[in-house]
Image (cartoon, rainbow, N blue to C red):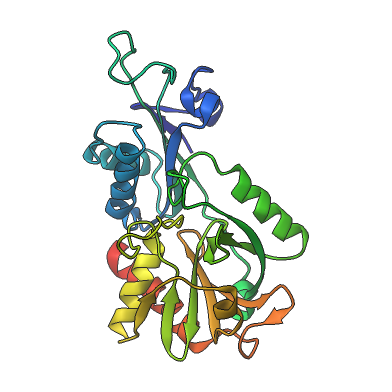
Length: 298
């Protein structure tokens, strides 16, 4: 499928950015990954709002209009005649010098680089959802003092390294602890627990108790959609600091992201979660989430 790059479409082998692009030189950039169903991107507005908030908060842009980005996504879907796909939108600072202050009269005019890459959706084996996966504990690693934590920046190296280490041990995800050894998230997902009929979640960025340290956890779009599904079932959702003990005494554990949706975790290292089977709340919320996608995109 052709790649959208700064207003034009290119074949994959003909889409190029400058060697001086700040995304390549310094990992100065953000991205969003979302799914297209029936030719429509699911929860695109939420993804773009998160992108815009991070872009302004981190100084990538003084402001970021999301309407042109939504139009670029629509163009990409139409141009490639997409019915079902995975899309990644990447925004970098373009070719700019980070050594000059933004208000400097000699600073160059910043022109961000925008790319949208469409690919086939990842197909996960059915047993991942029928039997659940194994997860390993990683960290402490997530740092509340890092202003880029809890945002989808291009600096994903450590997360991918932890995921690779988990995969080499036969696990499907690495569960990150923050520097105080509280639960943060998965390497590429949000982490949710079920205990006594209540859905528990670590605080995400922006949800912290007033006066507390920032939460180094991404406010996931899929996570938010699952909370909506839980509310529709009158399930209590509690966001708080969670410990490894909370994890190991949970009745159910599952992960959320835009790729796999709701993914059960039935083993944490050598510890069996609950009965060892996919729990009823996890199964119900996964079914509700898939139904939500159909309602909003079909």
